[in-house]
Image (tube, rainbow, N blue to C red):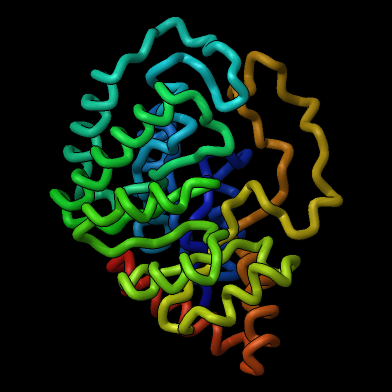
Length: 286
C-alpha cells in the first residue's frame, strides 16, 4: 500500500473506527493532528488500537488556544463548557503531552492564525503558546506540524527557535516564502485543494519531490464537496461548538492530489505516492 495522509482530524469524523477500516483498504497510514486537548485521549486510544496505521500528533491549534484560554471558539461564541480554562491549563496540557511522548509522532498542529485571531491580546497569547509548543517539540525531539494563516512573516520568525524537523501544513505562502522554508529544510504539505487550485500546483511544482508531503485536512477541504449534507441525526447538544461532522473529505483523497502532481511533473501517480510515503515515514519516524 502507498500513500500516507500526513494531516487530518479523525476526531472530527463520525465513526472514526469505520473511517480507519476503510482507509486500511486504500492506503499505508494516517497521521491525525489533535487540535484541542479534549480529543487527545480519544485519538491516543484509536492509535493504540491501530498502532501500525494511525499515528497521532498532539498540539494546540491557535484558534483553539483562544478558546482554551478565553472560553471562546473560533467563531467568537462563548464556550458552553462549565470549566473556565486559563493559561495554566496550557501548562497542564503540555505535561499531558510529555507523559504520552512515546505514543505520539509529532507536535501539532500549532502556529499562528491572523485570519481568525485579530485582537492584539489574543495574538500575543497565540505567539506565546506557539513558542511553548516549539520548545516542547525541541525537548521531546518531535517534529512540528505548523498551521499558518495570514501570518507567515511572524510564523517564520518564531520558527527560528525550532530545532526539530518542520512540516508546513496546508502551505499557502508565496514563492519567496517557499524558498525560505526550503532553505531551512522544511517539508511542504499540500492538501486536497491542490487538485483544484492552479496556484497551489504551481507552488508544488517548485517544491523538490523529496520535500513534498500529502494531506487532506479532512474532514475539511473536500475537493468535490457536492455531497456534503447536514447531519440531522445529531442534536445541537451532541455537536461540538464547531461542527464539521457533515463534511465528507477522507484520508484516501490524497490520491486526487497525487494524480494532479504527477500530471504536472509528467510522472506516474505511483511515483508521487511512493516518494511522499517515504518522505512521511522519514519525517515522522514511522
